[in-house]
Each structure stands twice: as structure tokens, then as C-alpha cells.
Image 1: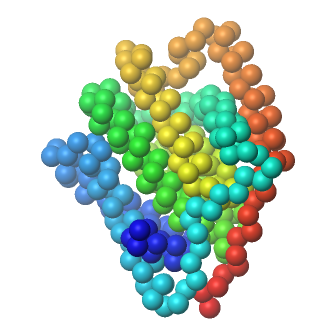
Image 2: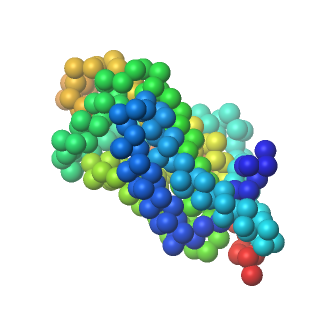
Image 3: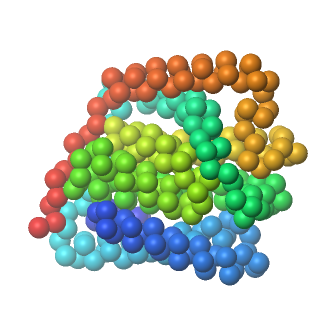
Length: 272
């Protein structure tokens, strides 16, 4: 796919990563004007079109200028079989989603965010919500934030700075304070997984898994407030037992992943 190949030549640093986020914001403004005429999935695709088009254009420019390509997806699972690797990251993601959930209460959800979430998770058609939230969001956000931004910043910054910045930009891109803290924390985990394995499909899958949890909760318990969590569903004692177990599971699975995977060497800049 020649269209996809152009992105391999695009390796944005921090400055241009901010530019990509700005384009997402411009796209969100355009989407808001067109929301009356579009389903949620079409509106979301429209919002992400500008930064992806920019990345493709810049990649084409870099290819013509003789810049060396850098693979976006080049999986390395170390000592783990791919199936076991995906099982471990799935367990870690499910546990971390419970561990991070209380951070959503640190900042009260604004009314406009509640209205937006109700439109997407409760009032929209099921196929539209699944397409927008569980398919397009994981594919497009991971391609942008990990496949382009993080991959580019790993060339010019150390892994810690690159992962932290990509997580911050991922959180900022959600454009609401209520999601910012959990999105940042999840972004750290997704960035770490990508750095350790250079497997974009792994982060897409984890993003899908995380968003699917919210989708299931909203459909199975439609009468719950849109900002409700497991603490509102489970009995208090049961919740804290589950929470403690999830903390332990998170630590154990991440430790195993750390010990058994080896981050691929990211080539030094070759643009000069």
C-alpha cells in the first residue's frame, strides 16, 4: 500500500507532534459544525483526517528529500510467544483499567462532557458507537500517537521523555479535563508497550480493549450515571478486594513483560 508507505518517512519530533494535536483540535471544530449531519463515526473520522493527511504529505516530502524510512510496526516480543504476550498485556490492561479508574473522580466531569458521552455511549446507535469508539478511535489514535508521535520522538529523546510526552499529548488530545489523568496514565502504558516491542497492533488492541470496557458498561447498565464506575456497580467490600487484586496483577504482569521483552533499538536520526 503506497499510501501507507509514505508515513514511514515521517518522524515528527515534539514540536511537530504539537502541530498534529492542533490539527486534531481544528478537526474537532469542523466536526462540531457538521455533527448535525453526520453519525458519530463519520464525525470522528473527519476530526482525525487533517493530522493524518498532514503526516502523509510530510512523509511524501521526506521520501522525495531522501530521508530514510523507519518502520511503524516491527514487532519484537523477546522471549515471549506472541500469543502469551497478547494474553499478558490484555490481563495488564484489564487490571490497570480498574486501578486507574478512581483518577476519573479527581476532576468532576463537566456537564458538556456528560452530554457528549451520553450522546456517544447511550443515545447513539450501537453500530455507530462500536465503530467510532471501539474501532476507529483505537486505530487512528494509536497510529497518530504511538505510530507517528512516539516513534518520531524516540529518535530524538530518551525513552522516558518520549513516552511521557506522547502520553501527555494523547491526554491533551481528548480535549476535556475529566479524561486527561486516566488517558495520560493509560498512554504511559501504551507507550511503554510500543517502546518495548515496536508493535503498533499491540497498542491498538489494548486501546480497543479499554474502550470496549466503557462500551459494555454503558450498555449493560444504561441507567447508571455516565461518570459511574465499578465502585458504583460492585458492593464496597467486593470492590476494594477486586481493586487490591488488580494492583497485584498489574505489578506482576508488567514485571513479567519487562523481564521477558527487549525494546528494539531505535535508530539514531538519519535526516542530515
